[in-house]
Image (tube, rainbow, N blue to C red; front, side, top):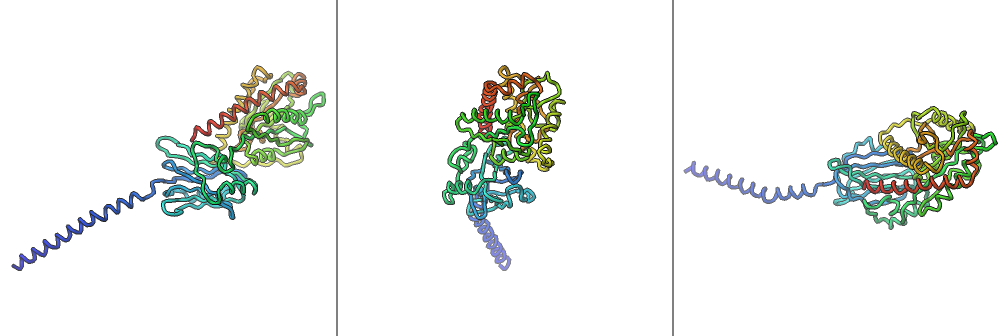
Length: 416
């Protein structure tokens, strides 16, 4: 009887355990599944920045397409990227202050929402913000170019900010400036008439000065491009002043130029060589003529009484990639200029050449140097003063610029 009682007690305890287990299965497991379903489904995998105090590029990689909205805030100046709740896998070293960005913070910003906050050194604007798929397995990439701007521009963007409401990022619209400023950013061309002021450049036997010829042609090209709808055309100089090479590059970058065209008309020792040439940048010159020309042009700062600035080495792989992408666009434009000149304007043999021109070193602005002709050649010298020839030359370049504008926008959109 005593044994039977114990057996009953044992059965009772077992029954209680079974009931408890069923309770767990019925209530705890659904709750755990609910908790799991509430876990963030989006992962922000990596964060990178590159650039300087004028322009900084930000790249964030995600495991899936992020639904991003933007917010601009002042006091201090901040760019806020809002998104669904996300897991963050950022390396702390990638968040160090760089370029325009003084700090980066991220984390939860409320129930089901996460946020990345970029604090800036001063007023800024956002350009070329895109989200595009990398491939089937590598997820999505958000890329934004942040550019230093004026207080007035920033306040205009803040007005469009609707006093705190966010802007949804559409993958079908680029650049993002169309949202922040009410209309699409105009395609901007910076024309750079070579030399100027105390630096006359090359001189012909007939005392024609390169600085005067390049300015006359630059004005012709400016007026021709101004006829294109939606195109903004600027010049590094519109009178006889000296500008150091780094200043020319800075002006292009600060203006948010989409294309930089430097105009020259050099002189060489061989008077039988003539025709136009289009140069792009390279650490190694394509030939001896290109090397000699780059050396002469790079001495412009010294001739003007300025000390040439040393170019910093590329220390960041992201900045290097930015320069590679920019260089690719430069090559595309150079080849199209040559194609549009061929048969209309006399060209040198192998008209697309390359060398280490300091004025072409903007890491984020596609840049070419166009040699109109050689002042050491009598035929070229005569053409350089011919208004009809200048008009034809400018028209052919304008066609290439228009092709480039259309192609660059198509390329940007195709990434989305």
